[in-house]
Image (tube, one colour):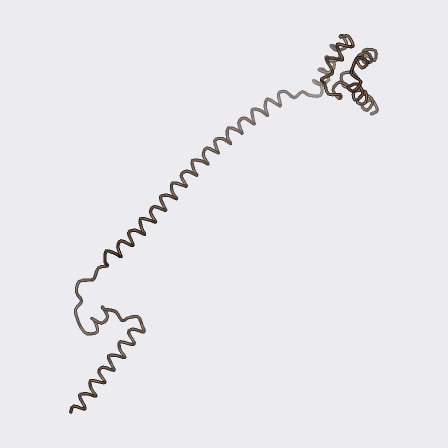
Length: 180
C-alpha cells in the first residue's frame, strides 16, 4: 500500500508540475491564477505601491511641463508672426505710396519735350560762360538734348566755355543722336 500511495503522490506532483509549466509558458502563472487553481478566494485587490504611482505622476508632470513649454513657444511664434505680418503690411503701404509718388513725378514724352524746350530757351538767354557753368553738373546726354533745341550760335558759345573734358562727351552725344 505504501508503494501505491507513493506512485499516486508522484503522479500528482508530476501533474501539478506539468500544469505549472504550461501556465508559466503561456504567461498565466501569476498569483491570481494560482489562487483560482487551488480555489482560494482572492483578497482585496493589491494596489500598486506608492513608488509606482510616484513614477507615473512624475512622468505626467514632466509631459505636462513639456506641453506647457511647447504651448508657450507656439504663442511666442504666433506673436512674432503677427508682428512680422504688421511690418509687412506697413512696408506694402509705404511701397504703394512711393509708387504713387513716383508715378506722379513721371512726365510724358510730350511734357518732357516742353520742359526741354523751356530749359533750352532759358539757357539760350544766358551768357555762354554762365550757361556752361550751369550745365557742368548735368549728364552729357541731358546737356546734348537741351543744346539740340538751341540755335547753333548759342550752342557753340556754351560748348566753347565748357571744360573740354565735359564738352567732349556732350559733342559725342550730339553727333550720335543726329546720325539717326
